[in-house]
Length: 250
Image (cartoon, rainbow, N blue to C red; front, side, top):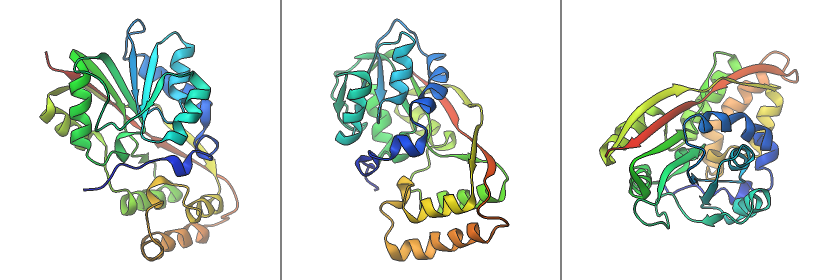
């Protein structure tokens, strides 16, 4: 079984390469629409705290956990001392502590996803809600996107799309009350910029890939990126994310 991914190696470049607070403010409204403002909310996989910050700015009360001490250090600077180092698969809370929990870009890096869902289920009150924005990306039909989709499928160990999460969640005692998609995000990078980022292992699922596997599975696709017409010219692409709302059965 795979182990959960610790994002400490990315703590110094994560916000810069993932959109930082602007990205958090873009995503947070989708979470806010699905939770109550007057209830304490657990951010399960807080990272650097960009989503929690956006929710706190709009009046929500948020506490968080994350596996990475380095990421949490940045979160504490951002949102205050409301975070603890812990894994989704071993939450440091009593049964029925929360009425609402969310995870944004987290479930794809949880080593034992069924155990993680079981832990969330345990610490939720009956009828409590778990909002999940999976990490796995849904790509458009642009040639660059097709290459990126191949890289994701070749190297990402955990698929956390609804097709996988919902059956696991139902098995541990959740009911899926919503499965949808967020508004598409627009990206503008050149194929060369993306190729260079891949060679620097900027994607989490490339960190643990050894050089032999990289040369076999990723390097040919990097060459395909550089072989596209005008590889130094930015191209506009869209990616989509799902959103899943689970409720603990009463």
